[in-house]
Structures are given as structure tokens and as C-alpha cells.
Image (cartoon, rainbow, N blue to C red; front, top):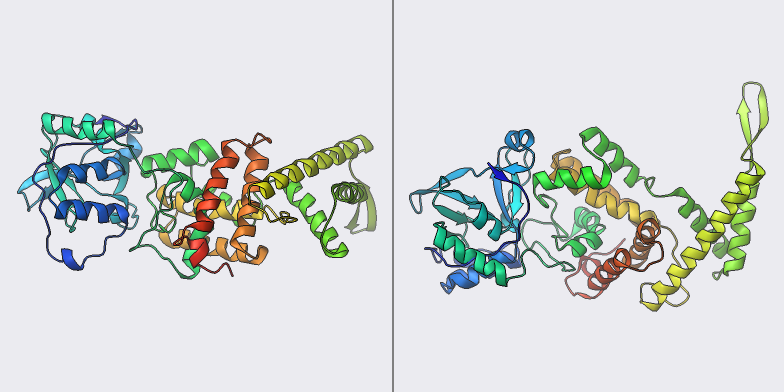
Length: 425
């Protein structure tokens, strides 16, 4: 049993790794990480191999029941490897993980964490990607683990943020599922995770559950189903934002495009005041029921006018930064929900609140809804960014905005970006 606290990792000093292996020449690595491991192994450059491990995440299988019963701890499960006739602690890089199953699950840590967490009673070997052409075995004696930590101390520790990562094998790159996955690509680039990983393990089972608990208050399959459906229907974000944008869309349609701020403010006030009384159909006939008081209506109107100001100031910054073209405006913030729906499907799978089939269906629905409401990836992106900023940023133009601006630029410029290789419609 070990403390489950996260630790940055990297390593040094190799043990005997086996170059080549059956089928190595014809093998296609699933991602750039496994490609780099294979290249280092082919040169017998174990220092370079460990440098690669130091800059990525390592996953180890564990019984789900144990992790559920012992939160905050992890356990090493010994694996017998005939290649070296010994028991090992087997770890895998993200591209070589199997599809999520109910049991076992995986926890994720760095190479440095494994070096520090190793106990005298643990197996004497670390097996990296065993059974694959990029496999290697490292002796786990204290001195050798010290070399692992040296790599950690000089390395970046974990995947770099703001990076477009693609699964070359094992993840869709075309078709409906890929389109739905690409709707969540802003967050994937921001977090440095594979944009097209449908078989999601993410931060590992314990941390995926913690993510949903801390950020969403989500602790059960039932709640996941509810939140997933709300996101897919664009009912999670504030309806007030969408109301204001819908009024402007109507004005733009009726008056040929440009809508000045004063015209927009007057229109939201007019529509809002028209709604202060409602018509209700009852068994006794049609009756008119009173809506909000005049004071409440005045407060709502003033709030909407302030919102119009916030949106126009964000749009001005978006134009300056290239998120919007000159004269362009945001049509809807529904994409903030659709993008999060694409990710929620995978988070739910990583936390085992849903099956792979359920997650895939949700991802496809997210892509379909996005294509109905938007015309391009750029239009989708700016709606997502505005929704995120209205919720989190408070016109500070801080990391809530800057992180998405960086991710947007990556996705709209890198040649292998799904936003450049997958048609939006």
C-alpha cells in the first residue's frame, strides 16, 4: 500500500532492455511517445529511453475493488514476465493501454513517483510496455531507481500542455466519432491529452473520479447520465447568455447583419418587458398571469444590458486576437456545452460511470448537435471560448481565456489538427 499523492517523475540508468523483437520492423507505434521509445531502444540508448519515460505518464493496472476500498492509496500488482523469468511491475504508456474495462482499472503516475514509491518487498524489475516492440526492462534496485530520479530532476515531468497529441493507431481520425471527439479538442490540447482517444483512461481511474467529484460534484452513474444529457441539450450553461445572443441573431437576420450595441440593448429590454406577463391555458380557459414585479423586471433588464456590454468587450478582444474576423460576432455559446459533453463522455468512461458504447454514442451526439448549430470549427470555437469566459473569467482575460486562445491557435494552424482534416459538416 502506498500514498497515492501525485509526484513528478523521471528516471535514469538502464537495466537490460531487449532491442527489436518479433514484428518490430513492421510495427506502427500508436503515438509519438512509443515511436521515441522504439527509436531509443533500437540504438540501445537507455538514457534516452528513460528521458522519454520522464516526459510522459505511466499507467499500472490495479484491482478496482482495492482502489475503491482504499481511496488515496495504490498497490503494485506483480506480473510474471517469461522474457526475464522474473516478477515485474508492468507499466504502460498511454498509447498502449487497452480499452477501458470494468476491472482492472489503471492508476497513473510518473517515473519519478515509481522510483520513490518502490518498497523492498516489491518485484525487482520495472517492465515498460511489456509484450510490445518498444518494451524494456529495468532493474529496480535502490541505485538504479536513483538514476530514474536523476532523469526526473532534469526533465519536464509529464506531457507538455498546449500540445496537439494524436493517436496514430487505436483512435479514430475520420468519421462521426472522430468529429465528436474533435469537439472536445480545445481541452485536450490545453491538457496535453490525446484528442482522439475514445478508450479514455485520462488521469487514471482514481483521479478521473476525483476530477468529476471536485469540479462537478459528480459521484454516481445516475448523476453522470443527468449531466451528460444536460450538456448534449445545451442546458448546462446560463440560458440568459443564449437569450441575449438569440435576440441579436434575430436583429442581424432582420436588418442585414450589423447590430450596434445600443440597438441590441434596446431590443433585449423590449423583449424582456414583453415577457413580464404571460398567457396560460387552463381548464377554465385562457387567463393572464402576472410575471415578475416591475422592480424585478428592471433588475433583469439592467443585468441583460450589462451582459451585452460584457459580450461586446469580449468580442472586441476576440477580433484583436484573431478569434473573430473583423465585423464578426458570436452566434451562440451552446458549443461550450457541446465541447464539454464530448469530454464528459470520456471522463465518465475513465471513472467507469458508463460503458465504452455509451460514451461513444454521447460523443457522436455532441458532434451532431454542434454541426446543427454552427457552420465551422472557428465559429464553434469562439462560442466555446465565450461561454468559458462568461462563466470563469470575469473580464480579466487571464488563463481561462489565454489557455483557450492558445489551444484555438494550435488547432487552426497545425497541419494534422482534426479541425483542418475533419470537415465540420
